[in-house]
Amino acid sequence: MMKKSITRILFLAFMVVTSLSFAVFAYSNQASVSDKERSDTQNISVTQENIEDAIESVNQEIRDTVPVDSSQFSETSLSELSGNGRVYSRSNSIDLSSTSAESFKGNWMATAYMQIQEEAPVGSTYPLVYMSDDQKTMIMLYKNPDGSIVKKVATYQEPKGQAIDLYQMYRISETEFSGEQLPEIMKVQ
Image 1 (cartoon, one colour):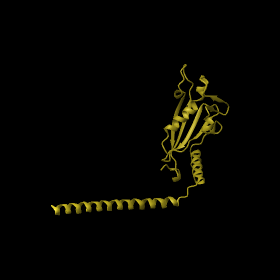
Image 2: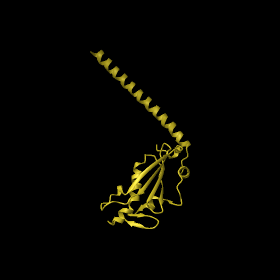
Image 3: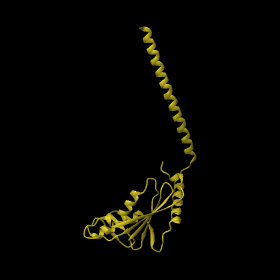
Image 4: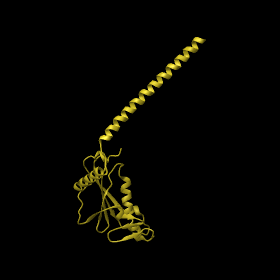
């Protein structure tokens, strides 16, 4: 009986030591991989200037690949499209707190912008936005993580009838172009 108890205790002690050995081995391998990854990361100097240069380089590639007629379109920003409850254009602003049909008509740009942004894959670049002089066409250009460049054109459509549905006030078309891979500094990790 005593011999069986000693054997069991020795067996349990052996199992505990073996388990601890595997745990230490696994942790040391994980730590060495983390140290290697850390040293690789330290070799890459990421600065605000590096990021801005990469963004401008990608934006220039997009502009070169998909030129937009500057006599009909002007590059704009999201803050010019919407901000503080207003939709802005070069000629006027429309108060969205109003319930008039004109207010909703002006909001088609912000709604189309948001829809296009939501449809873009995670890791895509921030879009370049162009508005036509007559405020009836918006072009958005962005680069997917795989390097392809996407051109989405939202075109205003006059609402039919009394009911105004913002999602029926525009039509979106899409064209895709091949491009270079995103720089490593811009890839989502």
